[in-house]
Image (cartoon, rainbow, N blue to C red; front, top):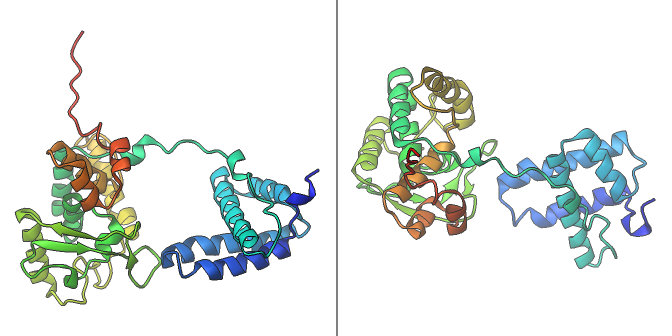
Length: 304
């Protein structure tokens, strides 16, 4: 049986979690608060409805494992642990019943495919396919490949973030799915991104097409307003790029997010320093060394 230090009533957990959410609301990104914290709240509410007699951290963990995936349970216990540790540090409770439980919930290592990239030839074939089959979205696809930004960062770009010469971009905001207002980038970094002739020409063409109002998006959706890149992924990117893979024009299907990995890999292969790529892509040098630096080299396996 769990000992007393693991005891916590669901009502107590719900009350502390509510206070913790209020405390954290001003220090996390709005999208994180809306997307993640509400999910954890709903899980507590479900436990209160379906298993109101749960009274310790061990039984809460086991109930979560019985109703959610291992990864979902791990993330939930991680947040409950943070909440109760905050409560301990705030002299609201004496012990943290969730301490140490997350370490027991190990998950598989993230698939290396998460960092895969198109070759530059595959990139160009993908762009050409959109120019032929879905020309409205071709500029969006080009900027993903040519700038290496996250889709939510491109969706947040307004003309006020583009220099009058179209030779420089300011990447300082993101517009995640489900949010109506822009927020800081994923890691709160900003970048002044210099545009080469190809990207500058694309931006000038977009300005001519959209009118260039400073408050308007650089890459709007088909009906105006924001670009709903999740719908684009499902309705346009996935079927077209899967078709390219089936026809042998590209080796493997990869999502639009892998355009970012393609840019980072290509930038390193072209001789850019890790520090410069880190700044322009808003990703740590440790991540670049761990996931990109090796694959940016062309490997030739000799016959033997």
